Structures are given as structure tokens and as C-alpha cells.
Length: 449
Ligand SMILES: *[C@@H]1O[C@H](CO)[C@@H](O)[C@H](O)[C@H]1NC(C)=O
Ligand SMILES: *[C@@H]1O[C@H](CO)[C@@H](O)[C@H](O)[C@H]1NC(C)=O
Image (cartoon, rainbow, N blue to C red; front, side, top):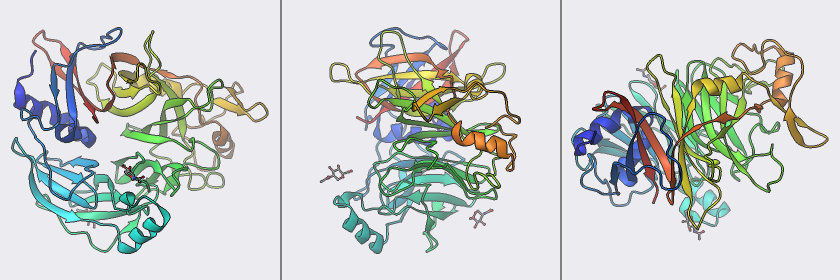
């Protein structure tokens, strides 16, 4: 099956992007690769499968071509409207609404400025030697309800959030009502972050302080209590860097990279993780007040024999499955090590069932005397710590949770593709029927080069 040009792009790319606005970035600013793979066929060795279609930034054959506007830069955050006709773009100090109904160059519907205040800019310039960072970089842009978007930005190292009204898909000017955005947007535009709106609540993973040493996984907005990860208990390593948040039925998964503390031998070994929290978590009553009581994390493993481990996750998406098959998470990884001066990338698939099983398995525990992580193998506590049936007053369970947040088993992915000399940073996936009658997996991969 050969995709045929532009109409293929629009029809193939957009549905997938509804789930994950980030991937649309590829259509605008990135080199994009399209790969058609038979389901779960791993290619062995060096180059891997060749892309069926490969576009460079600005290629005229794309359904949507290059948009630019003088004075605007850092198109960091994308949101596709429900009717797929409008693309909202969070840039540096501005938010744009682009009309993408027709192929070609997106047309600017309207644009609203959202600069950081002069006071915050001068405070930032005083504290940072590099004034290029003292702007409002928009880093969260989600659809809040039928009439409003919700946006957050770095606001010159002083994160801020606001609601933005919509009228006929146009953005209404931002009122003065700008709120504190700590824990939702990073301070530093160089830091990664992720956010997803679920049932009217924003689940965000980002850096929570000026220095960039305190990552947080937080829930805010809506009717449920605001919940955070506990910094003191070190549930996250200080360098944790979030790349995706994916809601499921009962839980929200967060994908991130951090330095691993459970392995010895290495000075600084990066590891990829999935963490999850329960949507019905309300925090503890006596213990873990305003903190997650269901935070658990596990290692994601994407390796192929004969290759260095792909230990740095860059992006992850969910492909919901039609029954009887199981939904899978697809994630793109690079390695912290270079070979011949270049890095390689891999795409791995993780079954949601495997992920859930690891979270139902044994925990790890830090031996405070030896500073080693070991498997915890004591009698069972009920309800099971970390499960979504833990109540706010289960003191015994919550005490256990404080120190048992790392799962013992790793979640092992199936490598679908390994490619040397390229660093993929974004992906989108979907299935498409081939002429052979079988469903094929279509991967859209973007690089930053
Ligand atoms: C300032 O920051 C920008 C963007 O982060 C970077 O490209 C530039 O090299 C920095 N300049 C200095 C003088 O550090
Ligand atoms: C959407 O949310 C905003 C902000 O909370 C609120 O002012 C507005 O009334 C809501 N709109 C609807 C249709 O619920």
C-alpha cells in the first residue's frame, strides 16, 4: 500500500493528532517520517526499515506547509480543535488560532498577545544572566470546556496560567485574571513538561522551582483536591524530565526520564519510567495530606540485542485497541551513549496489560544502611498499597507507600524499529488496512533537526 500524497497526510495524520496535539508539530516544523510496518515486526540490526514517505520542513507536498510570522518564535505547544479545523499554537508571548481547513499554508484566524509583565521580566533579568529566557513561553494549552481553553506559560521564570475565551474558534483577549502556574508550567523554557486535562482536572508533570531541581507531578483545577508528589520522600529524582501524560480508565500514566538510583556501577545512568496515579485519589487524612497516596513508578526497558540500551524516552502515545486486542503504548527512545558520534533511536511497544501487571507486582525498597534497593518481600497489606481502592485514612497503607513507590519488575517493550544516526523526538501512531486485508501499524516519526 502506497500512500498517495497530500490527502493521505490530512486523513491519516489528523485523527491521530486529536489524541496528541504535539505530533502535529511535525507537519509544520519538523522532518517527518512515515513508516508502514506489519504488526510487531522487529527489524534486526543497524539501519532498520526505510520510511515510505520522508518530508523535510517546508516540503510543498505536505498537506499543511510552513507557517511563519515575523516576530514570532518558539511554537512550543499545539492543540487541535474538536472539529479539527483549527490549530491553536502556543508560542513565545502569544497564542495563535490557525485555520487548517484547507491544505496549504495555515491561515491565521487570530492571535492574542500574552507577554510576561514588565515587573517579572526585570526580576528575571536580574536573576538570570541570559535574558533570552525572560519571556512568557506558552507550555500548556488544553481545551477546558466548550467555551474556554486553559493555558500556562513560563512567564519570565514565574509560571502563570489563564483561561482563554473562544468565540467562533477565535481567541478572545486575555483578561487580567492570571493565576499562579507553579507545578503546571516549568520556570525554565529549557525544561520539558507535560499536561493533560481529564474530567475537568489538569494532570501536569514539570519542574516546580526556579533552580530546576524539584520535579513535580500534580493535579489541579476541578472539584477534587489539589495533589502533589512529595519532594522530601524523593519519589522523583531531582532531574526527572516529563515527556507524556496518558489517561486510562482508572489511572493517569506519566512518562519521564530520570537518573536511576537503583543501579550501582554507574555514575549517572539515565532511565525511562512510567509512573501512575489513580484518578480517584483524594490524598491522605493524617498522612500524606494533599499528596498522592497512589503514586507508583516502574522502569521501562527498550533494548535490542547487540545494541546499547535505548534508555532515554523522548515521547509516548497510546493506541487504543479494538477488542480483542490489547491497547499499547508506543514510545520513542534514544540512548544516552553515542556510537561513532551519532545517536540511535528505537520505537518500542508496551502492552497496557504488562504495565498494569508490573504495578500489581512486587515493590522495591531502599535499605537505608546499605543504600541499596532490594526486592520487598514481606507479608501482604490490604487494601493493596498504591491500588485505586486505598482510602484517605488507611494509615498502615499510606505509611508503606511513603517508601515503596518503585516497582520491582521492569516493563519490557517490544522493539519495532531501531534506526542509527537519527534522533526521533515525536511520534504518532495509527492502524490502517492494507491491500493484503491486514491492518498495518503506521508510525509517524519526527526529528528536531
Ligand atoms: C541563552 O539562551 C539561549 C536559549 O536557551 C541559548 O541559545 C543561548 O546560547 C544562551 N546565551 C548565553 C549567552 O548563554
Ligand atoms: C468554561 O469554563 C470557564 C472557566 O471556568 C467558565 O467561565 C465558563 O462559564 C465555562 N463554560 C461552560 C460552557 O461551562
